[in-house]
Image (cartoon, one colour):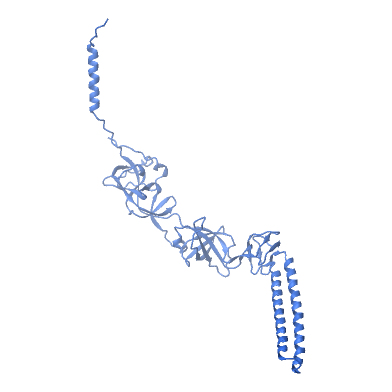
Length: 405
């Protein structure tokens, strides 16, 4: 049995028609995106400012002549008579090896000298007897020449034995390490009982006399230092200021620190007391040692003003006429504290964005940010409203405020 379909009511038909019309209007219309807000930025007027961070290098005082001392023969260290930091004098015994074997060798060499002396004396006596016989023509000339040659050979063997005995005597003396100069022991490398070979460094001794201030210089500053340039050495903690001049600049960088070692010779007067070896000093470079009355000036910007574009350092330059910003490439020379010293790319009087640089686009319209703490100050226009040395905390909090309608 089939039931007849009921026709839709008038109310349902009207509802369906309304929904279809609304869907058609929604599909045909496009929602417009809200306009991008005009961002507020902090500005700084470009101008020369004095450099705060002055170059100075930390170093220490070292002797100009410093040598590694060692035994000239091998053996077992019997005693070491000095300690690190001890002052020594010429002729002072520093260390000694066990010289029993060398003493026996010297005795054997002396015995060889005695044997060679006896043989030489015997040949000399034979030569005198046969010479008398030759004078009486009892022997031939050839026999006389044979005895003369035997005497010469015996004399040569005696000379060789004496030379060997002198060498063995020197070897025995070499078991005693004796100071040849006055100085200070700066390092100790062996202990009693240790067996060392000939030439092994035993002690390092700094010779008294001329001294150098030795300091390390980074790669970006080494080109500014040349031999002969004047520097000043400030001894810590007495604050004693000494004149010096650069004596030596390393030709290659240290493999570990990648810095260059520089030695400055102290220009001390004859009656002036030199600083102690190992004293900590501060070396002032040539530009500061010259004693310039006026501090150096340069264009500086905070690091928050710099941004990178394809390997090029950029800043945003504000145009007061159009209230827009445009990128400008700059070259950074070095750091001065928390600021970057600009070498080229900017001119005095330009205004640079120092906060919010990573959310800007070329030609974007901006407004100048005004701090709420400066509300009581006279109002400034966009052309003369730079913020110099703005707090770092406000750099990250620059609001994106839309202009009021």
